[in-house]
Length: 226
Ligand SMILES: [Fe+2]
Ligand SMILES: [Fe+2]
Image (tube, rainbow, N blue to C red):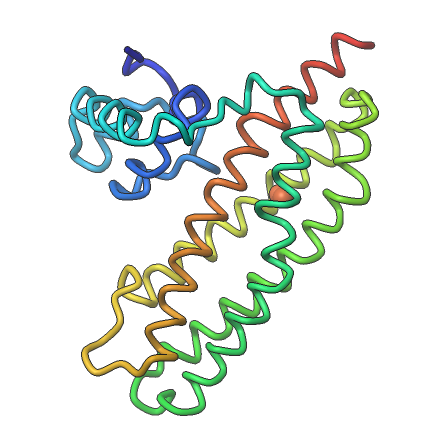
C-alpha cells in the first residue's frame, strides 16, 4: 500500500478515490497538492496511516470507477476534462448564480452573508469562464500538439488562477457553514447549498487533474520532445 511520504497530489494521482476521503477530511488536494501527506494530516489532527486505510476501504467499494489518468494519453485526459468539467460549468455557473440571486431577493434581509455569497459566486463565474477559455483556446491545443515546452508561461498563469478559485471556494464554504442550510430553509435555498457543494467537489477534482497530472506531464513530455 501507499506510503505516508507521498504528497497529497501524488496520493490522489495514484488513488483517484482518495478524493472522496480528502473531501470528507477537508484536506486540500488540488492547489495544496504539493504538500506532504503527513504534514497535511498533522494540520487537521488526522493520523496519516488511518487516512490511507480509509482510502483503501474507499477503493475497495469503488474499484470499477477509478481511472488512473496519469496512465492515459494527454489528449484523452483533455477530452475528459472538457466533457466532465468544462462543459457542465458553462450551464451550472449561471444556474447557481440565478438561484443565489433568488435566495438573496427573498431571504437577504434575514442573513447579510447571503449578499457576500452572491458576490463570491459572481467572482467565481467571472474568474472561471475566461480561465477555461484560455485553457481551451491556448493551452490545451499546445499540449495536444505536443508542444508542452511552450506551455510554461500559460501553465504558471493557470496555477495562479486556480489558487484564486480555491480561495473563493474556501470563502463560499465558510459563508454557507460547510453547506449546511439553516433550519426552515426553502427549497431553492437548499438546492443552492447542494449546487455549491457539488460545484466545490467538481472543481477540486478538475483542478487536481490539471495541476497534478496534465500540467506536469505536458511540461515533462514537451521537454523530452525538445
Ligand atoms: Fe480547466
Ligand atoms: Fe484550470
